[in-house]
Image 1 (cartoon, one colour):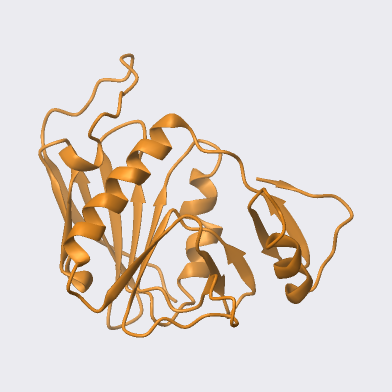
Image 2 (cartoon, rainbow, N blue to C red; image 1 turned 90 degrees about the horizontal axis):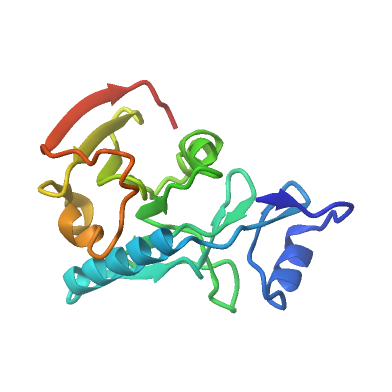
Length: 210
């Protein structure tokens, strides 16, 4: 992402601009940041994840949104576009346009070299301020690996990691699971990087607080 120079907008002005723009932007503290286009790997994984979750959510009181649904982090003022988001119960939106979600239950981000540090760090710190968020998933695009952070009763977050094409990542809060073989279906990995052959699932307490 890159900042657009010399543009400082109010949230209302940023929404008006964004709704007429052909390019998606994050908005934070008066500034717009253009979002880079997605790679083939990213798009393939996104399609697979959306298909898997959509099939499993049928009949549930949960709604799935793709990367075109903007999410507002109300406590911090960040407007952003997760790769996927799920809301259970009644979705709440910024206004009557119904294009800015306020209460996601699950957020999914597909990592890239340019955004990984942000997705793991500052962006996750802002997502953690969302009271309704229970799960945050990070999906690698260069190896079969999914990390899932789950909110705990003490407001900390527990990390579960699934590695390898034989692994399955459960998401109990929405009664779904992601088979890594399906998440990475038709995804071509860099042959110079050896793919993990064994399934590894581990849990560790993270010292995160909301």
